[in-house]
Image (cartoon, rainbow, N blue to C red; front, side):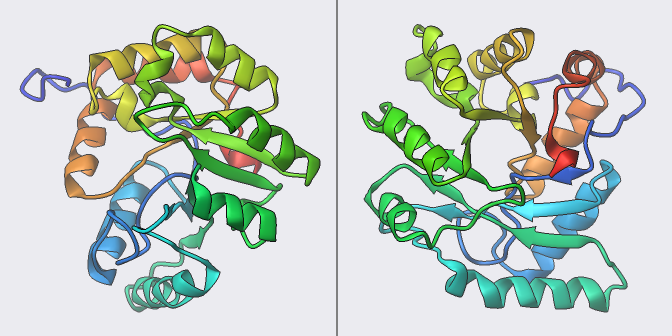
Length: 244
């Protein structure tokens, strides 16, 4: 992780104003636990230049079996809290679908939550690549949706199989890299893989993956580092965030 005690650079903004990957819907996953924390995190995101949010609550079997019904009231409460503070930022949600039996059932039933433009965010398990990922990418496109693979730089089983990155991208999946990965929040290897994806033109979206105040501090430090400007320059003209 970057040395927070080194002399900071002047902070810069994120290279997009629409965040599509954050966990700020209160009390629905491992992100923000309550409405006040969610609103505080969103205010912090605005300091980075974020003016529109599509939160991405987890959808995973047995742990976070979120549906439109489970998310409606927490989102209403969050919007009400922001309004009470005089904050009119646009906050919506889609979902981050772990590729498991529960999510596959949602895809089959057509009850999944997507981004504008018919983008749908999918997430691999962290232990092994799901054997059916290629079929999911194909099937979603047949239904008229574009899959967005969340944080491919975090899947260690691809580190020695980098050909899979290009194969999945060529098959039609868009890639979303985490700002926290660029900030080395998950480790040097994940940072290196994020750099590899950027240098090979495989990054279509960035997302904060913000869960908590500690994440906010890490992103603050990154935006004050010399690395951020170089990363964002390399991504110029490639990001689709603000085209949603």
